[in-house]
Length: 324
Image 1: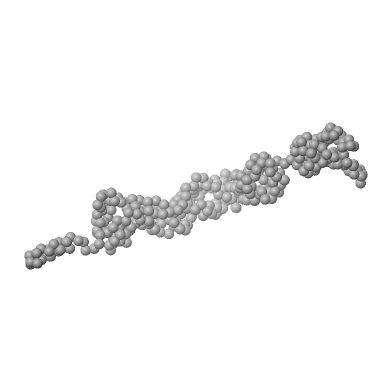
Image 2: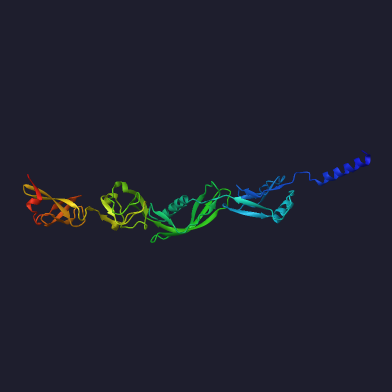
């Protein structure tokens, strides 16, 4: 190889070396999940150099995202000496900040404590009106303070501001309004109650329910409904209106029943046909199918009635006597 050719090769190699940056080119990060309240240079570019940890500005709010377009990325890269330039002009970097809504339980706890301090009845429940929970960083443990609280002791209404603080985040001011309501112990349906079904202990659970959702005319003690039924279906967990309870028939119209008659030294039983539905302790007319006599009787239980004194006597061939 001649000296001239070698010289030309060396010059070409030098030109290539001089045109190549000393460090590796940076790479755009098209999607980045942020775990901090700020955006750093490294969140936009991989291999961002010595300024990779430089804070560029605040991160998007928890639960939201922002998109940095190509022209803005180019300005940032040029300002901080990052070896990156847009190629198509449509490049972008999307910065995603995960979040979760503020839980309702600590909000209610803070409000109950604050309301108790301004005269709300002890043990009152808090009902919020249209509360919009703010988004917080994932796994955040917020501190909640109730400020500017105004309480109407007559109506139970209140309004105020929640100061929600999380370490490293700006404090949020969240308007809040609602009512402080008294709680009562009610018997609620343990499962769906179907109309006409006899009620028992397994059909109820006792639960504290907030007024005015709990009306005065609702079942308080489960035992008050045992043996009765409901006229309309009641959903699981719902209170049972007292006016929806009904005495279930112990005997049905057209049912054959045993009639019992007692007199001094004599007990008589006979078979009859009930002429109407009747519940325990209620009165019902009963037909003797043999004599066609109708007597008035009190319901003793399923299929049993006691003929009232003074009712028409049954014919002797329609009953069985038992002398005491």
